[in-house]
Image (cartoon, rainbow, N blue to C red; front, side, top):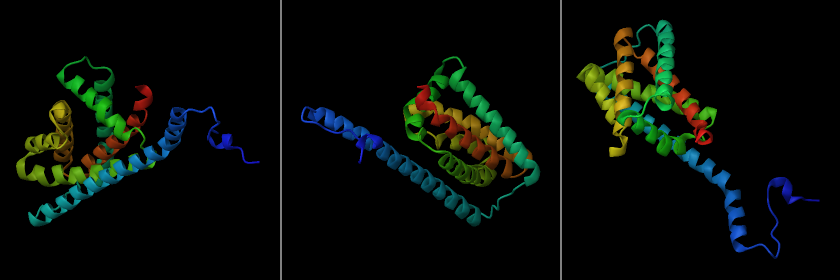
Length: 217
């Protein structure tokens, strides 16, 4: 005999109100809706990073700025160390630092924007989006813009690229500081390998941390 209770579906009797029926139907639709929204976020993130990669490729080709890779075998380790430092700094800011304009602003973006957007990312989505972001953003900002306009100016533009309104100015300032670190890695190592690895691994760690944001909230 088919038992609807095995599938989490509730039978409606004559005494069931319309409100109860609506609430149950909404609850049954919520997982599918959340999955659809997550897929849209992943698709938008990949599209955005794809455009950055295309822009970096076009500018590098037009301006004759070939990507430099440094010493990949050495720089992968440096990039991993950089990712750990960035992740530790971000965690300390979110959980340990005393409140001020910067800290409160970054925490607000975290709770009001990033957790709702990314908390349902699975491991594969986090790895894919994080890795592609490391390639696209580092090639454009560190591989093309930094040689053209300098370390500080490229880092400031990197910060501005993460601002979506006045409420995100503090988050942009924090992104600018992280851009200085990533740009410093490019300068010290003489290539993009270290900043790409640092950025990509950091983003994967950050997205993984955001997955638990809803439960922590």
